[in-house]
Image 1 (cartoon, rainbow, N blue to C red):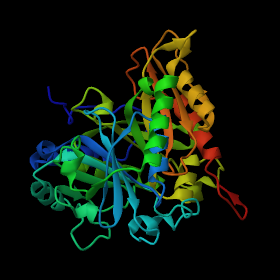
Image 2: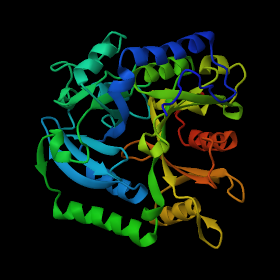
Image 3: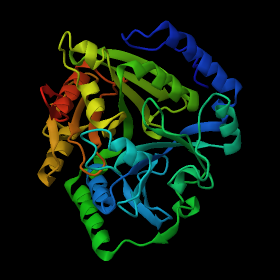
Image 4: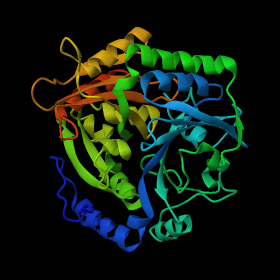
Length: 415
């Protein structure tokens, strides 16, 4: 049975404006009437970019901390591309690395605007690619709705206009792109990313060692796939970012909750066509309830907006689901995974939050920011069939822990 977007009642205690409540159902209806509902499917790829010379190091990190494994590498006109897979039905990863440190594009221009992203000007979460086609029909339908797309000759990285791909311009609200493609991403050679090349023996040995750690430690078999991904944005952009996203993909606004202690809200969007979020991960937008210049009257915590002020609007973390269960002596799997990764040298923020005893609940933790991607990896165990999406207490604790690690000391303003 098709998901009933129009009659679904969002969850949560975050109050939305009359504007949002008016246009959300209108967007669902226009998505259907314009054909987008039928032309666009689930998430197929997550796209990231890292600094020149760091892609192998990044893949080693992904091997140890996620279920993703290298499938193939290609060299194009301006970038190296590495394709990584977990399970065939889950989204793949395309990891991009500029061939030259002097390569300039929108990523470098945005990153240099913010104090804590200047040191890694090429590193950024780019966006997702959704299954879709025919691409000319998607372009036509969405351009009629004021969505802007890249055209050949207008972008420095030709990947964004390559045959079989359609990419939006970066969102003014999130900095992320939305892509569409009908390619089979389980067949990397069919993607046209460039000339295929092999990793060196030394590079492959590093990946093999990371794979051996995941297998011998028992961590690898417990990491299932991407549960959700969260972008941090400014307070005033929250509703616009959600509605823009819903315009472009067949997701629905699941709901939003105030995280009062952290002066923020968590806003969740899910794909109504899947029973398992790992098939097409949830997209979360987090924003302050009050912007910094107003918050200064009350001086409440504001780690969400602090992140945006220091790093820019961008993806904050990607969550990996840990298989539910007890590892040994009553230790939950997520606790075991975290301890094993700590022994390997992976740094974490604070401690695992939440309890999983006899009732459905969540246990979660944030890693520290990756020096390669600037992303946090979250680990989440959904215990005993927990059917919600998150708990407010857990989110508050995670947000606070991340905020303490994302400060920029400048003058008399320490945020």
